Length: 140
Image (tube, rainbow, N blue to C red; front, side, top):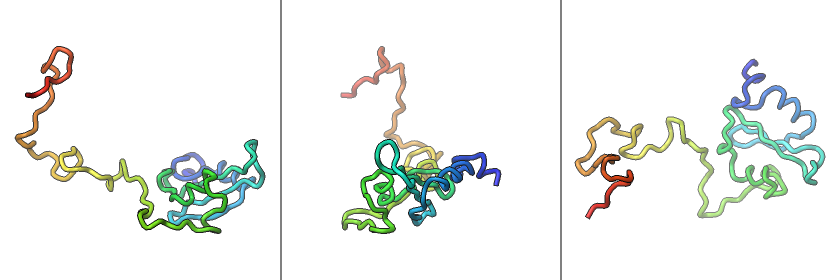
């Protein structure tokens, strides 16, 4: 309960939920448990504002493409009324895993597989003493 009151990064705070519940209507929910709302009346821009409350950590890359388009008024009707049809060349939505243990770590990165092993003989570390202006000298 305290987490809901004081932390915005773990989903919406109690004040946010109260404010959205007072002036907006629930439109739908995505496969990640995020909930989407639309205000009951138009804002100064002439169109109703749209909101998302995240299920858990507030990470915008967890919003699928269809809901992203609806939030930004690209699509007028929400995916609950008019489902988004993927083209044959489009991939399923995946959240951004940067900064998590599932992040991509290429061979040779400090956190990648085999970290801490000896560097290959072809590797030469850059040294600022290599030239007067700090730019490495070109090899011939």
